[in-house]
Image (cartoon, rainbow, N blue to C red; front, top):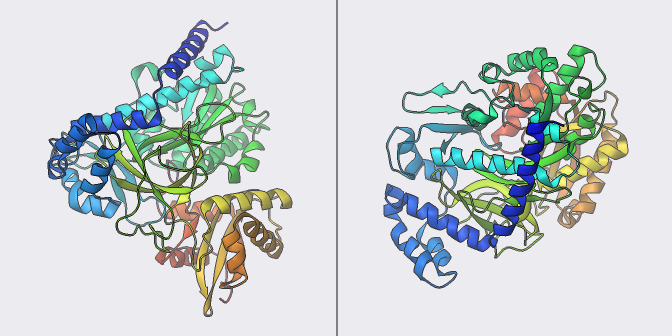
Length: 525
């Protein structure tokens, strides 16, 4: 028996028992979290402008619920452009005590997946500690998986992320969040961490994969962590290099894959072809703005919100009252706390965090699958849905339709995107679907996709009989999607391909495909 692994497993089991006994209601956890955030930031310029002292007094002394009404009334809702232009740009220039105490040393670079401009998301010391704390909790949650062997806890953790060699901008460092967090991993975890400091610092994504591949046979990996597309590419590369049948021929003790960033379902079929036996999949919701949620138990439908570790959540019903047809937030939206939501409805997320985000629209949409446990699934992004004429097509609908159709047709679909276009005086959707197979009937794929979407979404079915007059499908090799990502400098790390292209990005995408010979001529719309 592996002594260290056995001790770790027992410690994990005890930690889970203690955690479950101590857990307060989600509302109480969130109330305490908001109080801590307000107390910490009350002497910042943001805190003084919005009277955080009064808000804190309301939490401590007023009747239940009054504090949240005052918080909504006092602090405005922000998107990235608004909070950056009014506040964060000053922190980026080196000013102290703007939205969070002290000077902010690190910024995570993110373009989201709907905008071209690079976003600078602050990563404070408090946020780094919060991410580490939640990461440890996620490891502890493995105690719920009873069949894991003791010695698994002594195996390596392969974390495939951005470069830890951050860009030095004189007054701050910036880079991918996964690179920032990997640079700050606790000392006790370093013996288990792969690919190690030297390879983790590599900025060239292609060279990083090459170096990992060359050393892969020397490592005993039990856990892998990363975005599904990049993990799959790496495993394919390793299998080809060593001329083996599966990744388990190189890493026989691999048992757990913690994934995040996008839905895993479009990747599952191709991913599992690379395995000799099933893995345990753990869904993770780690964004540039914070560690939001993770799957805490086997068989859970969703991920549990982290309600007691530096993030205060609010939820905006994702409907026409609060968002326009482009997914832009309307003035004075309705906002709710975690105890006010309903299961099965879509909400856009607002975050107030220990990184100086305040009522910040992160851009993701979620749905509660178990309100009592605070378990959610990600359904898409506010900008990544199509409603040209009332079809209300979400990324969740798209993922499910692609998954069902790929099963029916025996296809390996890793990537896809959809564009909403004008079609005469009406509208159409144009799908670009990436497949591994070379002989695919695009017309059959179109017919099946259209039918599945109509089954999944009543609004889509109605509009296909009225204003949404046509659906086009262009079949591409998956390489086309990764080549586009590479052309934008977005290979690897937490980057993922947009599921919906709008506005100028549609022309950019089509121009890229034509220039690189993936398509000769677009169909006439």
